[in-house]
Structure formats: C-alpha cells, structure tokens
Length: 81
Image (cartoon, rainbow, N blue to C red):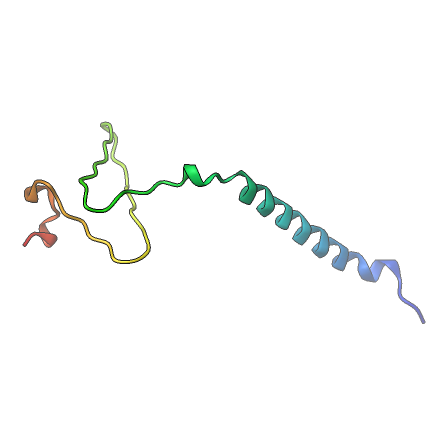
C-alpha cells in the first residue's frame, strides 16, 4: 500500500497558497519606503483639512500621545477642561 498523488493534492494547494502569500508580503515589504511613512514632530501644531463631504480621521501611534486644540472651543464637548 503506497501513497497516491490524489492524497497530496490538498497539501500542494496549501503550500502554493502560503508561498503566494509570502511572495506578496515580500513585494509589499520591499516597496515600502521609509521616507513615505508619515510622522508629526512633537511640540508643534498640526492640522487636517477636509472638503465638504464628511470624513473619519483616525490617529494612532505608539507611546504617549496627546491632542491639544489651538482653539479650545474646537475640542469635543466631552474633552473640554
């Protein structure tokens, strides 16, 4: 009793899928330039502008963060001092 090719088909599909995903990640890693990563220096005022359509702005980062509004009346009502 030996192995048949049909018993290895699913394994081959899984290996090909994983290899394809890893090659895709490799292309992404190579194409990301460090100069394209956005950062905001601390201790300076920053702003964002949008047009008439509503947008959702998500700010995320590592380490201590803080949001200070130049005009305190622009702060959300639940964050005003």
